[in-house]
Length: 179
Image: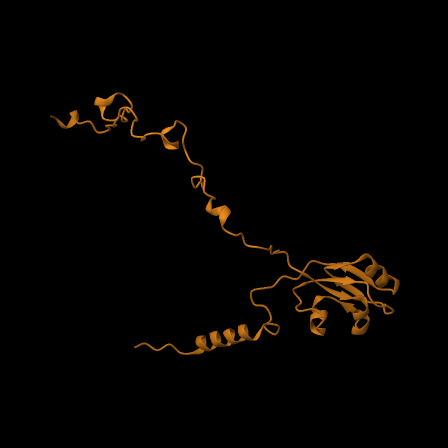
C-alpha cells in the first residue's frame, strides 16, 4: 500500500434495516414490537408525557403582571396656587415635596381654584387643568421627562445608597499598602 492509495474521506453507508432475519436487523428493524415507537412517523411532540398530564400544564403559573412603564405622579391646580411661585416644573415640585423626585413624570389635574398667573412646564396636563391655568392668565407647556445622569445629585437618594457612596469614597482615599 502506498500513501496515495489511502482512502481519506471514507463515508460509512447507513445500516440497512428490515432486510431479513439473516441481516441482523430484520423483522422489526430494531424498533421493538408494537406500540407508538414502532410505527412510521412516530415522534412524540415536545412535552408529551405518554397521556399523563404534561408537566407544563400540571405546574401552576405565576400570577399577575408588572408594567415597566414609569408611573406618572399627579399634582393638582389647588396645590400650585398654594406654592406661591411664578413658574412650576418638576424640580420646583420636588423641592416643595409634592412629587418624589425631579426625574418622575408629573401630570397636572384640575382640582382646586386658580387665581394666580403661573407658567407650568410639566410632562402632562388634563384639558380642564390647562383651561383653568390659562383662564387665570398662565400658560401650560408639555415637556419630556428629565432623565437621570451618571453623576446625579445625591440629596434625594435613600440612606443605603449614601452609605455605599461614603464607603466607596473612604476606600478610594485609603492609601494602598503592599505586604
